[in-house]
Amino acid sequence: MKKYWEAGELKLFSGSSNPSLAIRISEMLGIPLGKIRVSKFADGETNVKILENVRGVDCYVVQSTCNPVNENLMELLIMIDAFRRASASKIIAVIPYFGYARADRKAEPRVPISAKLVANLLTEAGADRVITIDLHAPQIQGFFDIPVDNLYARPVFLDYIKDMSLGNTVVVSPDIGSVDRSRSFAKRLDLGLVIVDKRRPKPNMAEVYNIIGSVKDMNCLIFDDMIDTAGTIAAVASSIKAAGAAKIIAFATHGVLSKDAVIKLNNSDIEEIVITDTIPFDISKSNKIKCVTVANILGEAIRRNHLRESISELFD
Image 1 (cartoon, rainbow, N blue to C red):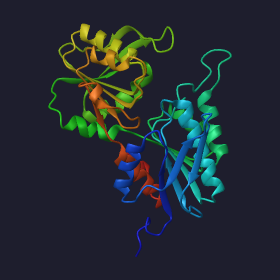
Image 2: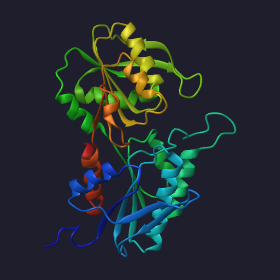
Image 3: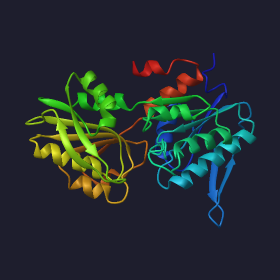
Image 4: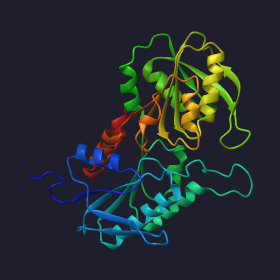
């Protein structure tokens, strides 16, 4: 009996944003990456050519919409269009990091809801399904008129923590919006929860007003979905350190790490920062930053989706 990939029913392709993760996924699934050529015209336009037959095949396209966000997003849209016109049976966009997710509502007058716009673009391009990890806001799934599998990096973080010898530990939510995520970790680790009351006077700037709970002489685990300029997490770490925290370890699914974020983290009170490979990062830039892979989670989700098995059971 043929395995599902030997039957030619599934092919995995990679864009140019995160090829190392795509290779890890292909190794996990035991299938080679499909052949595709992505190039640029002289004026910067993206050109795509699929170099093998995909007619009647379920095609999974791995592409994070990370920096440079607009180029990677446009590349993904063009690849999806190419697969649609090549008569692929289904096109599943595997987007480990979903850019523009922070613009998920009208927080003030005369601003766009960019996450909804991106959802429309992906659907209109021809995507039949989206697989992503730790959306900034779960309600973004409702922006799509196609199915969305929002996976969680939680299992790889929990495995990492199990190998650490930490006593007298508490989970710290870096803001009110992260309480559900932090509570989920606290419950699974059987730890207490501390909440930081943080305000944003403007984008990428944070001010800490209150710490709800005690961190004195406690090892603190901070969980967030992303670290962008690192201003928020550095401010939170400074505040809980001043309140008597012992060791501080931060976990974030997406290491966006814009501008001087790495410098801020290196100079912060955080002793260790653990991110995943949803966005490629050169760990030689910092001896504080560790990277764990989500390839197994994405690979297993692809396998289960292709075989029509439950994906939610991955996180039960």
